Image (cartoon, rainbow, N blue to C red; front, side):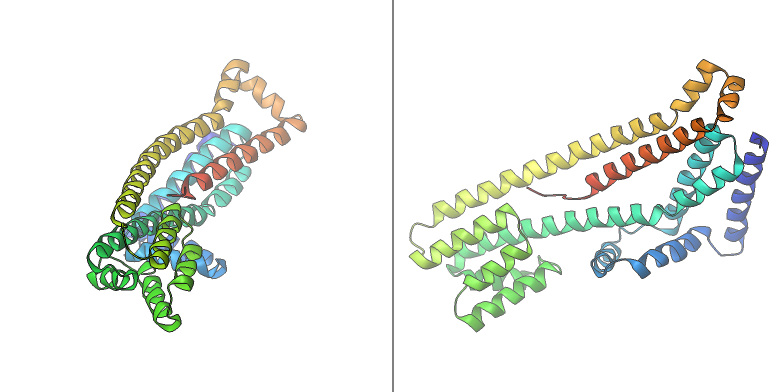
Length: 300
């Protein structure tokens, strides 16, 4: 197999793209409907709820973004695997496998967006409850004030409403605080609930200083989370660059050995096996990095 054949396949792919675009059958919509639909079919319910919230926030990938991602990943995979093996069939197999990763990357991205959204909602919930309590001197009334103010969105809004219902049904705030703390196990939620439980049990006397200190803790935590988010984004960019450079190390090997010598090495059975292992390990390394970057956003 020669590089001309690889170029021919690339031309066919781009030809398909422009053909479908002219026929009002956007290829991005094709990828989105088929690959994302396939992932939706087997994905857990929790992911489907996350994806719905991503749609609601207007941050789901557009068909154009899906197209770019599929072409970029598939094209990069085609070039790299052909440079590794000089075998068009192997390259096609790897390209197909790489395209199947796109829904997983979309899933990780949706989880990150959802996690960031929930943390921002929790930040709003804790800050506003403290401010409302300064006026009402009642935890339940504070919750009602926050819900009625319209600053919260679902699912946090509906969960706070459920807290209010639990407080009225049980006559105490204890179970409601436990419910919310378990549902959103953030440091600021647990500490604020513990503080309000203490105030409720011991009375609201001299609570202003404690609430002010709690608000300061929330502000400091929020600042550290957003700083960490920027640092993680910078690390993620450098991580991807490093991973791509690892893939391209084969070019350095071929430069040092010479292309003819490299092709002779490919005829030895163990060399292609080692190259497959290198590709799989590097891909696993990158996917683990993506998983780490997109999970636990706002975690403490």
